[in-house]
Length: 462
Image (cartoon, rainbow, N blue to C red; front, side):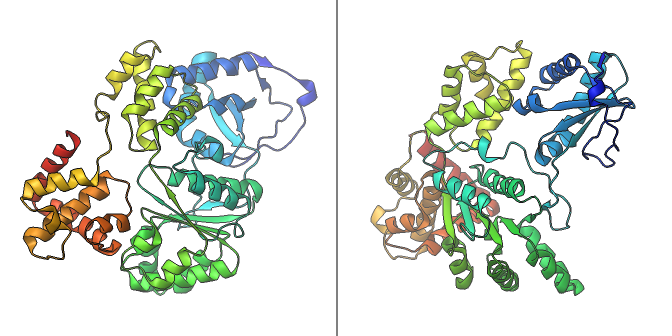
């Protein structure tokens, strides 16, 4: 292996002890030849395209020590990514390029003194892709993005609490992690606790059973930022809501930042105490919606660039038109296309995109209206539209009405209140109850599941 010697850089120093610790080169540690490192990068990108990131170009190979190439990355999130996903690919590439039994070790000179932790006080790895720089804004997410940036720059002062809600795969986790990374960038000593609501509930139950409430409260109330995902799971848990209420108050009064996410706004979480609904609305409640076509195009272009992948414009437009549901599916489409591209000598064209998306994409969807849902349901169950909007509670009327509400929630962008307005002015709790009733009925009774699937198919194919 060719090594570039640089006497001016032979400052003595102690090598980093732990994994990821900053590296100080000793007089006996030669530098790695930049050309060798470039070949290693090219090897990794060719053999493992899904792991490739554009920031690989900013990695710095420092030295070769005891058969290990010491490589420095810029952030703790990049370090986590490299240690969890890139250790083997880079080591294999280094051995293939040099013909020697060497390994690659990753380090970071800017490890924060604080960090992001889970409920067990263990460091929680963040995704280096989930930063504000990699987030694509559009009409669907401008408000939650702007609010998240403000919170990242001034935690506890801008919007407290910040409550972000929306469907699956629309970018809530991206924003939550981006805030955490921005806070640590600006205030490296910050202690951030990031966990799911389900974990909070389980930890509370365990603390009650073992009598460790003091330790539980200390863990959750002595942080700079508390991030809880899927807070809607607090629904119906009176004792846990009581404890979270006091935790919320302690953090808020201490000007500590609280960030919450859910699949619906606070007012639509069933069986949630009014005092919690009120407090969740103290800061800012922001909704993330499905991305429009133009935003999907921008997301695809951004995700492709992050992986060092060049996609033809017609391929980008085709994917954006075919994959409508969420950002996660768009990223999955790129991953699949990239994998198929390897099989076809790296060539990605429209024909390959059609082949790749044949299994995961639905036909181009037109917007389904509530009137179409009315028509499909009334025809199937042989009831009148006026019956569904009436106050009648007979099962022959009530169940078709619930099916209508369920399908309206699935296929339209109307809120629970807006859907209720189409059915005789019913409130959001009635609509939410209808949705959950139909979901449960589909799980419990095969016949009902088949009925819903049939009506659903009629709507999609109209």
